[in-house]
Image (cartoon, rainbow, N blue to C red; front, side):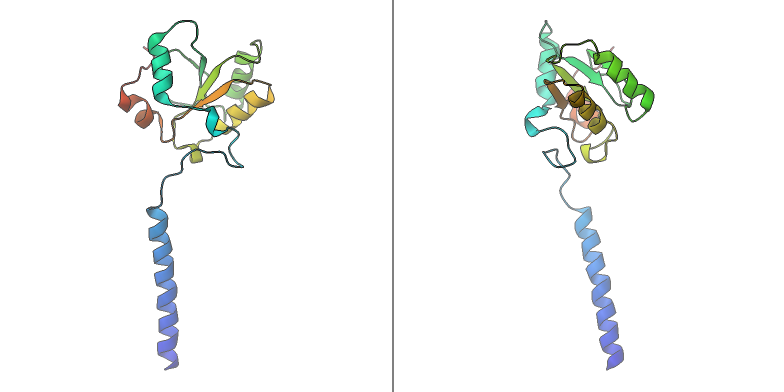
Length: 157
């Protein structure tokens, strides 16, 4: 009887771990929002369709678009490179150093989902620390391919 009880307990533990693993695999993807680990607010997210429309329209109201990742450049973007590399972080700082603090700036990486991205938090935090007040994060919550390229939005030529 003791053996059956022990086997039952072991089986329940194994099934519990299996259920947790299955649940973790089917959980909803992480969507960007205001949390303790994100230096941006929901209102600082810019939808790709909005930026694509601004690029298409052109004109003088286009924000400074900074590619702070290791992905393709969207049209009108300045390529900084992955800012998790110190030399690229310095390039970001020097690119914006002489700009007015209210300059409209859009940053993006697009290498991977926001939750895993090694570039967007350091870049966004650095711009805030430097006193920039009009910074947006391009909402590439999955990646550049899914949220920009697959929708036919413009890339640099």
